[in-house]
Image (cartoon, rainbow, N blue to C red):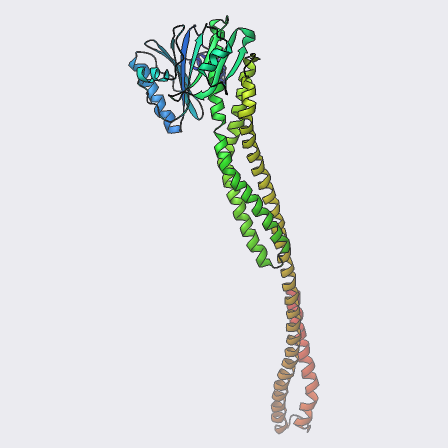
Length: 440
């Protein structure tokens, strides 16, 4: 039974009606995920890991189910991310991780066997193995009680890359050169100086994890090398645009510069989004490696390089490169944002100036229109008064002929009415303007 299934069965206290948190079983199961397995000595262990997509992981899970059923064993649970099987003389362990899947086989070994470069063919010839995904890690490990001097291992491994450490306070020794053999496998030897089976199993798993995660940590380096030219070009482009912004005078030039700046920022942000996960994963994997080395209680061996020294010289610069590129991308993104904000502020200020000038021009036009309107109104009063006076003239002439004007001539009556008519028209016009003004 998987540990997650066991935790699920006991996630709620018996005989009590408590509602358990929905992820309690998963949390408790995680504490027991990937436990150390006892390892008898001598032993030969093989590990292969493949980068897998979501679809690859689903296909792989189905393959493991079929493998277990074929050999009459229980398949992994739907939520399980690791499972162990015994297939003939092989012990098999399957593990699924977020971005890769690992397969581990171990078999009883014979003391005194040579650690040949074609030992990986032993695994591939005896097992029908065709997993989905792309191979990223292939390693073989020999656990033995044989003890050899450093000079013997210089004949098995590359002396220029030979690393050797004492672990578990002298109860074991680990030897490797971190290089691949003719079959594409990296090779490790663990000398047992008095370990228990449990300690041997813990050491084997930690060594395999160091090899797996140091390979995964280096996945960020090629991406960092490809991203660096874009970062350099963006920095140069930003410097050039900043100089052009300082020299720009018209709002049209500022609009063109803002467009260029936006394109530059978009390219950088696209690259940052594509690389951020890989860079973060490289740093996280490096932290795991350091924690595993610390748990192994690494101690030096006279005449040999330690693992930590090897990683400081080979792995740490790669991780530093990834971190440097990520930091430069973040810093450039902030500078681009500040520059774009500065340019938008300038454009906004220029637009406000244009609006102010436009309002001033409109105000002048309104004043001119008001004066013209007042002139037209004066002419309108005169014209209307002229027509009304004409009507009065016709009216007085008719009244004169009828004898109703008491002998006063129409001309005199018309002349007397002129100032009164003009004044009346002026008052009417004024009242109309006053009502419109109150309405506004």
